[in-house]
Amino acid sequence: MHALSVKNLTKQYSNGLVALKGINLEVEKGDFFALLGQNGAGKSTTIGIICSLVNKSSGSVSVFGHDIDKELDAAKLCIGVVPQEMNFNPFEKISHIIINQAGYYGVPRKIAEQRTEYYFKKLGLWEKRNNAALRLSGGMKRRLMIARALVTKPRLLMLDEPTAGVDIELRHMLWEFLTELNAQGTTIILTTHYLEEAEHLCKNVAIIDNGEIIEHANMKSFINRLDTQTMILDLASPLRDIPENLKYPCRLIDEVTLEIKVSKHHSLNMLFDTLTKNNINITSLRNKTNRLEELFIDLIANNKIQSENES
Ligand code: ADP
Image (tube, rainbow, N blue to C red):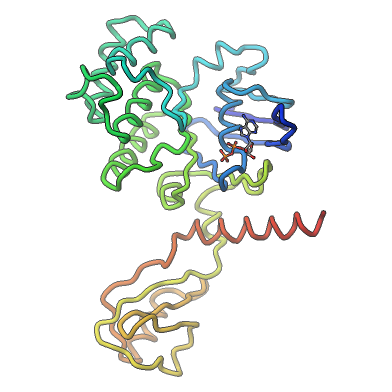
């Protein structure tokens, strides 16, 4: 049984716009799954339907074996959702927001209080427990929504852009928190614009474009498809010209920074050997862009060309 199984999902909004054109998705139990796509691709619509916040036009969704058309309550009990928009009462005390949410789902008050304390402490909200939500910063409001989604102990957590507009320190704290949650058994589905985040956290990935899934793969094997990586090397001493026998496509960004393309068939050791033979010493190296981003941009561009050719 899958944590999530989505078959031939379509959505046409009342204004006639076809947002989903037959989505198929399968997410294993215990997975950390990235649903990626550009703005308007259909990610939020897909998540909205899975969480029954949006009506589908056709197709089926099953959550831990519960079909949302036949066993909606059982399916909903399995899901915790963190939507993009803040959707709580800003005047309510934040601990009440969480305890009331637990109440809707039938969690006894004592247990709800214990869980609230646990998640507030984990997410750095405990000191603010008596504040009204409107007095929280943007990052805290996002963490409040995560605590609210978790208080019912869902088996599947759906996060729609959880780190949008969140500073780096907090983003890292959330990554750690989510990794721990996943290690403890919670299946997580994440949409994000930060592809570095998806590459770092997720085991599997699907890419949605224009209402269709154009890729559904294991993250590691997907990344492995990248033929060349573009690396940036910081040089220990200035270099005026690129030596002719440096047989890699490269260019000098400035005299101490070299951009170099390395095919996956060339090990970095071979690159280092060549550099050493040419008396080029490097102090550090990094990927120019995140590898998932390189693949993502290529895929979207190819899909656009294909769609244009077909029409
Ligand atoms: P994403 O989350 O990937 O940015 P969405 O699922 O929000 O994409 O949107 C997919 C498409 O559906 C977009 O073209 C968007 O404008 C449209 N859309 C989303 N919500 C509505 C709505 N309530 N009514 C009409 N069109 C909508």
